[in-house]
Length: 171
Image (cartoon, rainbow, N blue to C red; front, side, top):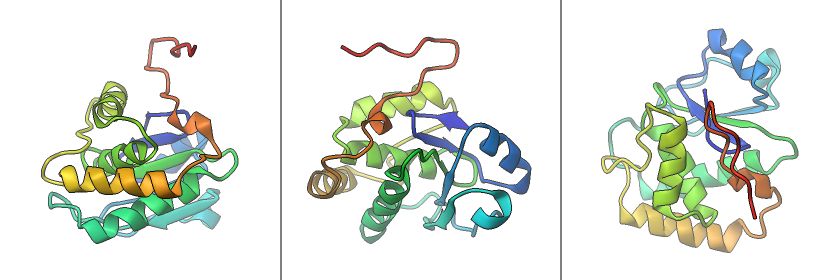
């Protein structure tokens, strides 16, 4: 698991073997963007919510799936004290791209959002050109501006400390 912001993390498929480490890291909500259903459930593993929003691997993300997926992530992330784990199979492209698009929807410039993710997850390829293009970025920006502000949890857009480094100071 790679914590990207103080609220959002990405990584590989949430298997039963990964439940313990996820719970120990404080994960409360799980968003599965893999093309296969979740192996875990909220009630059995102690998460508040586990949601499946399937996206195909290695193909362009359909524009009609972008908004529902971002809205689901927004709903999970804005719950009080939520820690959201977004996963696909490997945590390489789909889950980092969904988090990347969400950060863009929250007003973070695409290159800054990409850097946050890549600095914290060495396997991530957020915004990979096989999955998204300028249309996805524009859609996320417009939708976020119209629907996600004012944001109830500003800590969501505070980058997590990079392992071995102190958190960046604001102001």
